[in-house]
Image 1: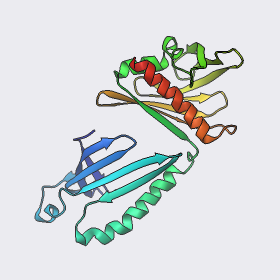
Image 2 (image 1 turned 120 degrees about the vertical axis):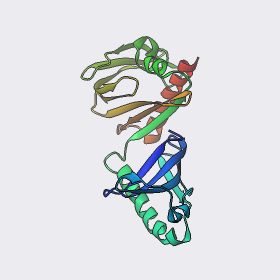
Image 3 (image 1 turned 180 degrees about the horizontal axis):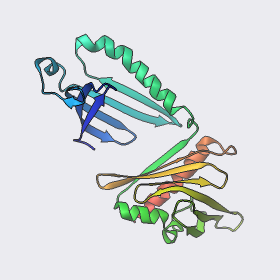
Image 4 (image 1 turned 45 degrees about the vertical axis):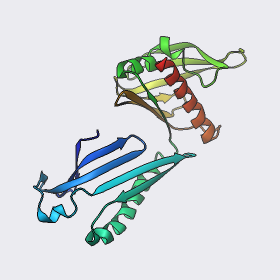
Amino acid sequence: MEGSKIHFLSPEGGGMFSLITQKKPFETMLFQHIGEIQNFEEHPITEETKIWSGCKERYDLVEKNGITTVTASVDTVEDHVDYFEKTFPSGLEKVKQIAEGNEKTAITVKTSVKDTLENVWNKFTQPEHVINWNFASDDWHCPKAENQLEAGKNFTYTMASKDGEMSFDFVGTYEEVIPMKQFIYHISDGRKVTVKFHKLDDNIIVTENFFPENIHSLELQRDGWQAILENFKKYAEQ
């Protein structure tokens, strides 16, 4: 959280300690570097570390059409410019490789809800609440919901058009449930979905990460899941 201390360490225990001065999940991280660490221990500020103590390191993320651009910037002294010009591109390339690895097709949607963590969790998981928000548009509804919120057990949400022409059951099996924090489930076709709840000031960030199917476009699927999540936000905050 903002104001917390963080250690940047090598495997040998060398590095530096810093403060998190800004943290906006999925958007911005800003660190202010303070001093040096040796053998996993913080050392007092010296004349040498005074030269760079207070320098800032910032990361900004911007998503557009399923592509996230990461921008990194760092304050430094002239003697270290060559080092950062070599290491930062390499580090960002590793981030790219990890992010686009086995889960490169996964889609993430999120929303921010102004309510308590307990209320958000309950409204997202309890059937009597689910039926009030689990649809993407006003011409659809969720007439029935059943949920056994335990690892190894199932949920079934009936999704139907209000004109009665279309209806299907959205069924999943829980792999993991950590109350007030996250749950993981597999849809009946085997695709994995992770739902996380994160408190940020007076808001709860709800994040869903899911693997798409092969019938509809990624954009259509992303927009559909996001619409349901925004419907949840509207219901939870009323």
